[in-house]
Length: 489
Ligand code: ADP
Ligand code: MG
Ligand code: ZN
Image (tube, rainbow, N blue to C red; front, side, top):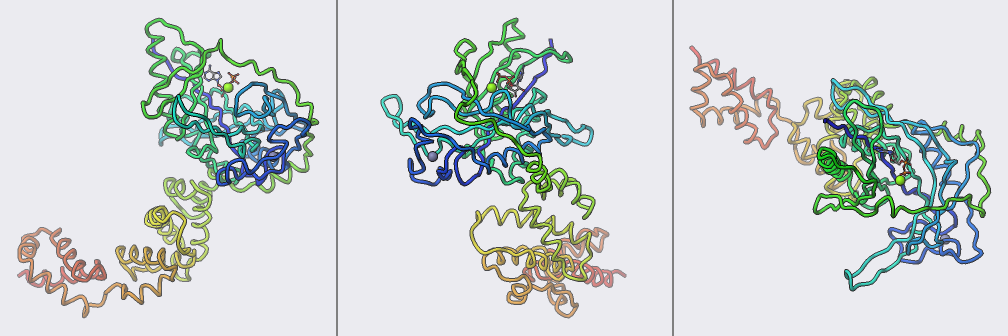
């Protein structure tokens, strides 16, 4: 029998508020000295009472809106009870039956030209609080350190319906969710640092049927690719079990990254009974529709819409537009560069060229310097692109100028001037190098005279090298052909 996978994802996102979910402690647990961001509320001292963080609620609503959810008029908080050393109160304040946002969707772009967009329903987005951070030191004989700074940091959980059909689709869903959350600015959504944690649920069913099989939940993936790998492994494992006539046990499994396997962590029998009940220390939260309207109006243009707009406004290809809009700051930068286009540069060609440079050499240099060094202003970038577009400087020279801009923050024109990088186009200056190339390469000349036109390219290469990349290759090629043609009888 042939099986098909059914996948649903649960994603915890840490919100980038300045204070915690239910107290006024700072939430900068990643950089703060351990246990310096604590108070009676997040330490769970008796009698301490929680207060809802308005900004966290706002971030949850914004996320729900961006995911096409319905926002509740009245929502409430519930206690999820379990005992673990990282859980200060012995319960987590979460949301059970009345989440803040429900019934949304994410649309995944077609995987290729033949495919269609795929809509993944979002079941709910709810708010909760993070737990303390445990650090195990020294193996079995060791001990555990505890940092309570993270306890009470706001989280949202985004739960999808089981609408994903492959590991690749699951990765696409995560990437798109990350992009949306980063565009909103509500979280860094970084998997490696734990501000975006994905649990993957997967089951198999006979291909073409509609029912749902028994699912397994896989945890502990700390990269997007690891989610895909864990799902691939799990699908293969379940296929083996079912093909041999076995049954899938409902369980939680952990992904072991270095061995690339999933191992059983907890079976259904050992599942917690969380004994949810309404949080008695917090009243239900009424959400004013005017508040939601205001937030709706303030939502930024998200990546999919921006991609389409860049394609229609600037004539970018789908590929270029997708790269430019993957990160909001890159798209902002691109539009600033296009906005600073010098008079005289042809608009559509300029935009295309700007996208090429920003996606290519600029991205490479920016990644290499890791946020340090002077800014390359959009105006400076625009003038570089314009000079390249006007063929004032060669490709090699433009790269050199850009590298210099990253180092010094100077303007493109100033660097071109200073380093004498202007392309050499006049015959008088090109001629010596052309003559030299022709004299030194009789073989290539011979080839050309025998009809092998591509020999010109080799000679142009020699001229380029002699001029350290400054010669205009088009003018050089013209000059070489002219001179060689004159030798033909
Ligand atoms: P649980 O109560 O075990 O957490 P939920 O119904 O809340 O289960 O679903 C949790 C996640 O598991 C959701 O993302 C959902 O889409 C997914 N899911 C539920 N059933 C299945 C299934 N049979 N196969 C794959 N994923 C599933
Ligand atoms: Mg679950
Ligand atoms: Zn606190």
